[in-house]
Amino acid sequence: MEKIKAADFRVTEGISLSDIPTKIDIGASEDKVIKKLAKTRQKLSSMQDVMYAHKKYNVLVCFQGMDTSGKDSLIREVFREFNPRGVEVQSFKTPTSAELEHDYLWRHYIRLPEKGKFGVFNRSHYENVLISRVHPEYVLGEDIPGIESVEDIPKDFWKKRLREIRNFESHLVNNGTIIMKFFLHISKEEQRERLLRRLDEEKHNWKFSPDDLKERDCWEAYQEFYEEAINETSVRQAPWFIIPADDKDVARLITAKIIRQEMKQYKDITEPELSDEVKDRIAFYRKKLGEGK
Image (tube, rainbow, N blue to C red; front, side, top):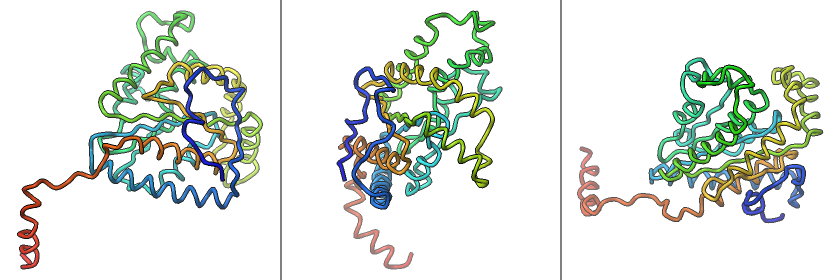
């Protein structure tokens, strides 16, 4: 089995998604991949327990990808061993009327994880430069002064939003948030096959929506805007990782491995020690418990 290295998937320079494979061979059978994932997520769970006790950092893990790229199942499989108190999964759909009464980052900010916890964004603040860019009429719902129609959206509007997102993430990092962003990279053909399975397999029918086909018609636009967003916002302290996602099991293992490798860099995340005062009184506490009082 080939060694999975986070550096091989991290975006450190301008990329073109069409040049990046959507499937790779890591030299392992399906059974071996699944077993390796099980071991890795147990190690991740142990790391999270220590982080929860340490309470100096929080972790934000963002997942983006085209429809059917496997975000839901990946999140389920990678984080399934976590103590529920230590991980919070947020899914961002169409903004509510209350959310639209605030700026576009507000609903994401209020769902950030507490110190000591992992926060998982299933879709994220990047929807505001992806789906809103493919469908710019969505911006009108934000009631931004001076924008009454799509034609009023300035040419530099999206560049400014990308800069605001970089600043938003920089602010989080400066206050103890560890950020990792994953783009689940699938091929258009693989998406077609997965959509067909939703139609062909009755137990998956509920997942299908005619809107899936409408969004599929915008494939090229999404690829262009994902590419720009990734290139503009992948920085050392808040990197993007592009995960070949045509093989779901391999994508899950790669993601879990990357998260663990990134977390291992934080040598200062350790379990807190008892104060000297408490240590000096351990014998006393044992005696009190031994007396049954």
